[in-house]
Length: 80
Image (cartoon, rainbow, N blue to C red):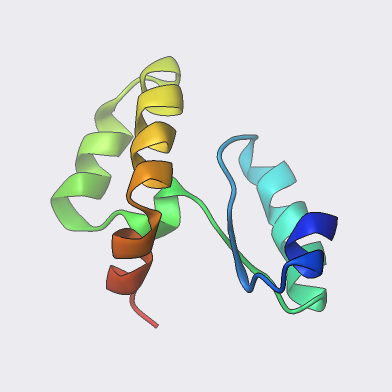
């Protein structure tokens, strides 16, 4: 989070962790003016259903690599 603040970033993509840890991190970041998103925040409709049907280990690396590679276009689709 320190580097995000140093570089003036307003959004971070969290690429792992369990839901509780992610929630805690997002709460701390929000207090500093940073939004935290994960793959669950960025996928909708059929894409989200497909993700939910994968086993935990299938969801991890390939999905997050894709999210990092396409972060700009994905964030522009995000409902506000």
